[in-house]
Length: 369
Image 1: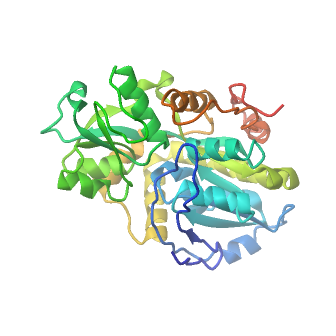
Image 2: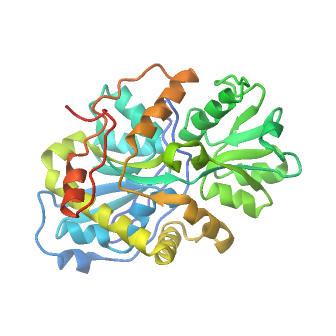
């Protein structure tokens, strides 16, 4: 897909890579980009930090609201001073990881599965998770004419975004806990797990080729707008109703060479998250404006209004839940037991949180030594 660029941010759309990963990836979004020129803002911002530019990647997706709103409102750029924020829009997790590994991306917003995949494949040498960003926003939605209770899922066709992705692993685990069996490779069994790109899931639902889906927002609310009903919110399955859906990662090389820049970005994300949580309606409008700038189309009220409150914006990476998701993938025989020691480095985040008078967050024993 050809890239289009902002004058200041030089945003790039990258096609989804065919990079094989242990878990799979976030589903492709397939968006373009467009935005306002903020050269004057950067020029007037003051002293540069140790890097001229920091390249930050994210998806045009509500679960990446910290990035969407933080860039849209200039909250991250403000903390960077004269160092320029160059935002890059990605279609899928593999392409973002490929950019990070290739040295064309410094920091990224991404889901837990691609983070784990990349860390394991590089033997712990390519990235660190440095912050949380979002929790929740995943629902089981179904055709109410065919499925009225959870037991009715047996024998039905349910979509997930991709084999081994975060939602697929969660659904396979839920199926196993029901005492049902499904082959994780083919998706065949007591429930037919149909791996379907989020972009086409609404059409698959309308055509009747799937009876429901275990999917993130806004796909879940798009299905509801087509007549589906929410049968289960995944948050109800987790302690404290929280689980990681989006992390912030950084190249280990960039972290070592430019810790001041990474710290500034984290100050920006923490302030952005505070603003989002204090101003939910304004933040929802800001995120939708960013989506329109990036994709040329905003989400309809009937989609964004129910989707937005189901996503919890948080600085906490909820590391224990990433560990659990990894264990589920092992149990489903999608991966071998991974060594995730050192995947987190929350040193700078906890420094920022402490300075803001906030409690520190935990790495669940998976931090750097």
